[in-house]
Image (cartoon, rainbow, N blue to C red; front, side, top):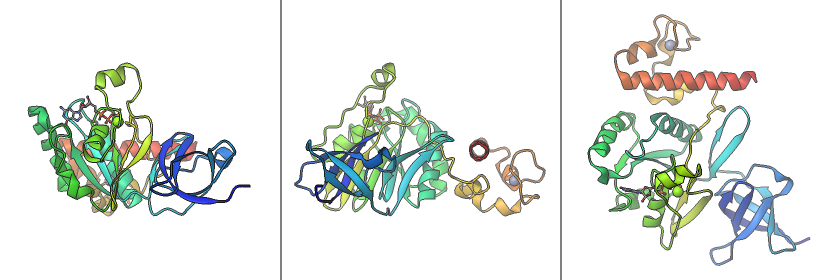
Length: 296
Ligand SMILES: Nc1nc2c(ncn2[C@@H]2O[C@H](COP(=O)(O)OP(=O)(O)OP(=O)(O)O)[C@@H](O)[C@H]2O)c(=O)[nH]1
Ligand SMILES: [Mg+2]
Ligand SMILES: [Zn+2]
């Protein structure tokens, strides 16, 4: 049997992984031993070369962080050992505030710092309107960067420095365009949204690490349409909504689900404020999803 080697997963294509042993070694195309689905881009692994110049991943090292999503049926790992999430949104195509909320919750739950990147700042009034709505999130403490990947992404350079960063967001937000603008030598495929959606496929199909410099990495990921958080317990969810966390113990009923109960501190606080009410609806939607998963 070939010897065990150590390396880092530098790209993940569903069931195939690119493993890189060192900066000057060629990446090895690996599969996971036993077809287990427990490997993510950014994982440190032990692998063996197999006869045909390919490899098999034998073990996955303990992780510092894991960003993942899960619905009732399965888990999807986004990336391991990342320490900063860039939640990328844009005015066109319009971003989903619910998806953004879910992405921020996943980051908070994983103990990973999140920054909101409003891309396509060159789009004028629509971009300004998006920034106004996003001020709700800056009030919660999430940093917001407004920039144009096409014109000038340099605001991101100091933010990325010293971190393992992942770009997360819907298709068409400009994640790969940012990679191409920021990572030396990167040539990630990008496409018009009409093209991407017209074929029913997202432009980026793999999660891939791009080195920025000796201290920093930028990971590109395929556009998301949904972000299941079934792993967050129903009664713990409110604690991940930064504006609701401090109100949780103040409802009249200690087991309040913040739906129809009287004297609900969350509902009272949100009443008459559309964006707060929207966030409360996301919370109750997530609670229902999580409860359903636990019953099934
Ligand atoms: N006007 C404008 N268009 C941009 C900007 N950044 C990206 N785009 C365009 O948006 C489209 C989508 O960009 P991509 O980088 O492919 O988007 P993506 O987020 O990687 O999409 P997926 O890989 O499908 O998840 C392309 O046509 C880009 O040229 C920007 O700052 N301003
Ligand atoms: Mg892309
Ligand atoms: Zn309540």
